[in-house]
Amino acid sequence: MSRMTLAVLASIVLPALACSSTVQDRNADARVTLTTDRSSYAPADTVSVTLKNDSDGDVGENLCNRALERLTSQSWEEVQRFPEPPNVCTMSLRILSPGESDRVEAIIPVSAAAGRYRLTFFGSPPEARTTNEFGIESH
Image (cartoon, rainbow, N blue to C red):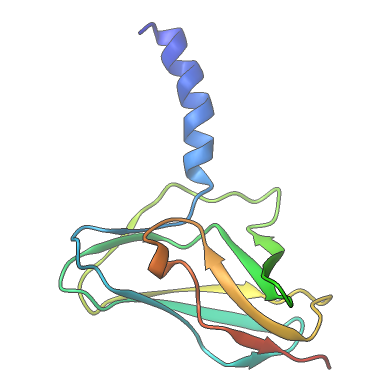
C-alpha cells in the first residue's frame, strides 16, 4: 500500500476507534460488573459508575463512550450520549488486574424526566456493557 492510502485509512479508522468505549477480556472467562453508586438520582446529579474485574485474568477497558438510556413502555431509548461534542474519547486502554476497578462519572441532564434509566457503554463483551437500572426522580 502506498503512504497516501495508509494515511487515508488512518484518517478514517483512528477517529472511529477513538470514539468507542471498550471492555476487552484477555481471557474467555472474564467477569466484570458495572454498578452505579446509588439506586436513585435527581436531574443534574452525578452518577458514579464502577467497573470491577471479578475475573481471574486481566481485563482491558475504556469507559469513555456511553449513553444514558430511559426505559419506555417498549424498549430502552437513548436520552444523551457522552462525551458531548465537541469532546472526544481517547484510544487509551486501561488494564485492570483481577479484583481491580475503575470509575467514571456522568451528569444526569437537567431535562431528564422521571423514570427508570441505565448507562450503556459501547464495546464488548455484551454482558459488561450496561449498568444496573436506576431511578431518576423529579425535584
